[in-house]
Image 1: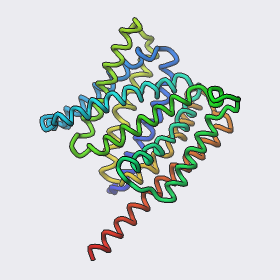
Image 2: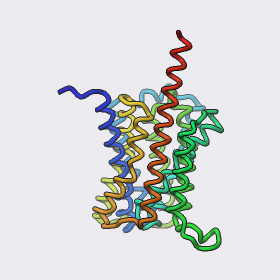
Image 3: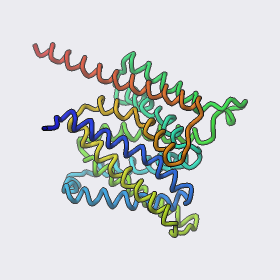
Image 4: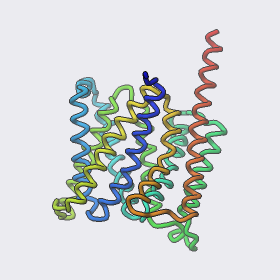
Length: 309
């Protein structure tokens, strides 16, 4: 039986979501044994190698010849943003005991993307998207809120790192979105991994840490790096060849549930009821945002068709 493009897109998007969900699990397992600089050196070495092999197979790097000075400047800016944002992401994974909570709080990232798109790209958002944004923020607040008096004690430790990471990821997404037609996605991905690897090597040297780590930690890093910098990105890009971004976003919104399952199976951890409730609220918010975007595209298509007639 022939598989339709919609099914191919759904399966590839699902692979991408499962892969990125496992990044939370394997990075958490590795970071319980190694320092952030040690982790970064191995993680991004393996990730960059897999991306380079894929790019060589697809002959992607021929497009480098067409890059201008401005394009290289964009890659540098993205690289710096990704270094800071990724550092805070893994610091959050390291700090917060349950990776599911990191995933749930991180669901606010699309809210930052929509807000910045509105400010910088003049893109409008629908009432459905606004409702989704409010739900996502409300859910993240419920998860993070600790109830103590004083701003510094009000939220759980580590939630601030998710906030920094999500906001920087949104800035990066907007810049990439504006330049994706000129710079191939694989170029963006490999440049990001290169910057992160160089930063990790410098950090390892500054803190005078060792490259010697346990076999168990190395195994977790190897598996996670293949799932994260490589499989997540590649499957995600391939999915967009068959299904619209809005449909992929709907599938991506279930990421927290896969992280929840992985945390339970791998660490025997289950988040508190209040965190689970807040997480489900953020997922509903993401679904509303995705459906809102889908409806907006349908309305735009109908309007263009009417104008053509």
